[in-house]
Length: 199
Image (cartoon, rainbow, N blue to C red; front, side):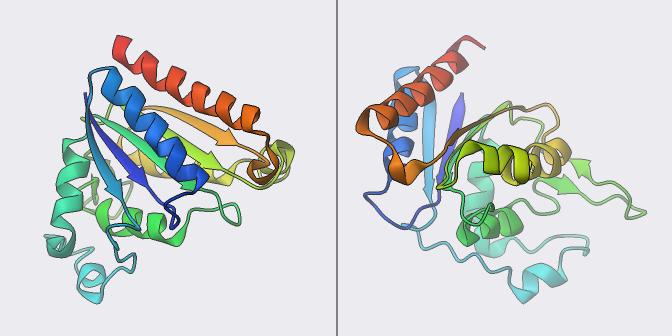
């Protein structure tokens, strides 16, 4: 498959970057084609521009400033998102990537009566979100009810790529884990992506 790996962490030596490398290695070893979108390294501007916002309901969305990102998204059959969860949400740069790239005419179409949007990402077959959190699992799952997972699964993929198989791997208490615990999570990432070869 053609796989797009989107990385959203500002530090080159971060845990998220090492997890991204494990994902890239697993996908490559399984024979997939891998494109990498490292948002911080590419200095991706997350702010929706005034031209982009004004064109959201125009006949044609102005995607001129994000053509390369749009091309990579539309070509992807599989998507891997690697990011830290900050304040139980996305890093701003990743939220901006969704705002600017998952746009009308790209990821979905507006209904003529402004009703439910119509999906366009029918070629996207698999998505894996890999994230690290400082909090324990019960805060995310029991108190907050996994807000990041719900946004990804329901709001984004559920409306723009309804046929996409979604998985999420969350590394909790990431700042207090032993090297063995971190390696076990790396192995989990590799196992999960290794299964994509047989689907």
